Amino acid sequence: MRTVIFILLIYSLILFTASDSLFAQKNTLKDLEKVIDQRNSELEKIQADLQGKKLKVKFLETEEKSHLEKLYALEEQLNLNYRIIIKVKKQLEDLKEYLTELEIKLENSRQELIRREEILSERLVWIYKRSRIPKFLTALSAGDLLQGARRLYIFSLLNRYDRKMVKEIGSLNLQIKNEMAELTKRKKTVVALKNEKTTLVNNVSRKRKQRKILLKEVKTQKDAENRAIENLITDQNRISNIIEVLLTNRSALDKKAAKEFTKLKGKLIWPVQGKIIRKFGKIKDKKYNTVISNPGIDIRAMANAPVYASSTGMVAYVSWLRGYGSFIILDHSGGYYTLYAHLDDILVETNQFVAAGEKLATISETGTFSGPMLHFELRSGKEQLDPLPWLR
Image (tube, rainbow, N blue to C red; front, side, top):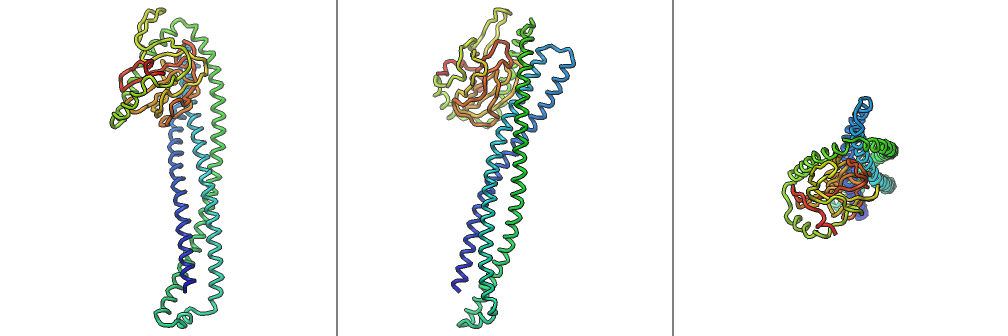
């Protein structure tokens, strides 16, 4: 009797421990699947946008449009390519983690199957040895009726557990089969994404060469620089609108976070190493005799120089505008934002956490004809702040 009860207890403990472990892995895989599906949805949207821009470039090539229009269309395409590349890169990282978790789960399922098959094998031997003595005789051989009834009840419990174990072994076999199929499917996805990334990188390299040729041609046009200034003024208002939308999307400004950020005044990391060529505030353009307001500072830097996050924050926005080229907006909480414009090789995506000093992108000439430079802004809500007093 004690042996039978001991077998039941051991079997229950094994089932409970195994199911608890498998449940934890299932939750991890579900969380990863959600991230992968969300990123895949974002990827599809950007890819659809890119297809539209490709058609626009083809149209501009057939039409007698200015080199400037063609340059802008090409730059916008490049920006979308960068965003797709980073999405694909992150998707690959997620999938690799997913595959690791899935392989662990598959191995655990296999080990669990072996354990259960061993238990069932032992039970079958025990049943075979006991089968020569009918259950009712075992019950009758008990000291009293109550003990006999208990023996019959234990036998029925063992029977039930045996049937349940056989059913669960069948389920485990099916689960292992499904997990192996999922593993094969995901591995194929990884290969496809790697190929897509290679194609995208090659496209970017080709488009950069096209941009370089177009940029030379644009610089020879007399009105190109003047039109670029007009685009910059228009896009300054668009940036203000983007910041306003970001602010309204926040349920409430965190006053504590705002207070913490103000403590960083004079301590922010320089986003790039270089020389300031345009300061914050109103600037008079001697060439065109126009006065424009600079909402940030412009830093001359080497082409492809790394651009760093000035402070810890969340990537709130990644896009392209004519006057800004490819740009990134970081949300530092408390209503404080920094903006980095005229970028190449964007390495981050929206809703990504970045640490102070983390590389965001590289310097380029997107959206400007003044050579490689970084346009850097700092805002507190809608208010434009002079970044210089905030930098180290």
